[in-house]
Amino acid sequence: MTGRLAVAALVLMTACAPRAADVPPNATEPDAAHVALAETIVPDDPDLAAIYDRSCRTCHALPGLGAPLAGDSAAWEARRAERGDDGLLASVKSGRNAMPALGYCPDCTDEEFKALIAFMSTEGEQ
Ligand code: HEC
Image (tube, rainbow, N blue to C red; front, side, top):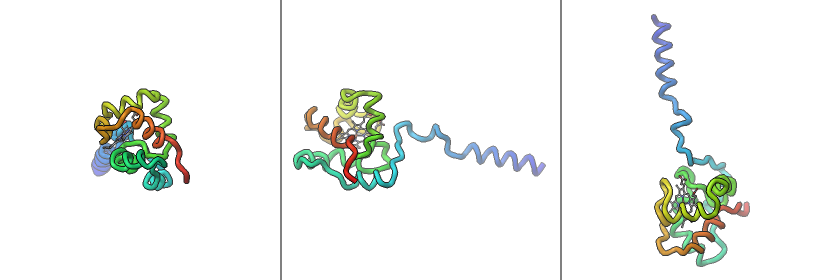
């Protein structure tokens, strides 16, 4: 009887353990170096840096939101491979999951979005 209870308890505990399916499909697990990098880098161009600072940076410099981090080129490459540059541009314009349409930059041009994506998807200086 005790043995059966133990088995039942074990089954229940296993059922409560996090499963792979609980992890959002777009969550990336950046390493500490990439987290630190994302916190510090900004585009060289001062105008682009100002836009980045008030929009994309809000989410793309923070781990845990599911956004590919600025400077983490591997995370961006996987997305580019799937959707191409046009697909990435379309995602920011129309929004994607937790990213609102236009990524907090309602007045950005396509050129500015492309430059911001190029900046974020390039491996930064370490
Ligand atoms: C409010 C948070 C937030 C802001 C602000 C934001 N993003 Fe995002 N972004 C995300 C999240 C979250 C994802 C991952 C979405 C997903 O695939 O689930 C993402 C993904 C992306 C992608 C990849 C889309 C794809 O198709 O895989 C691009 C490109 C992108 N963001 C560009 C930008 C740009 C450019 C800006 C600034 C103008 C910006 N984002 C601002 C949260 C944000």
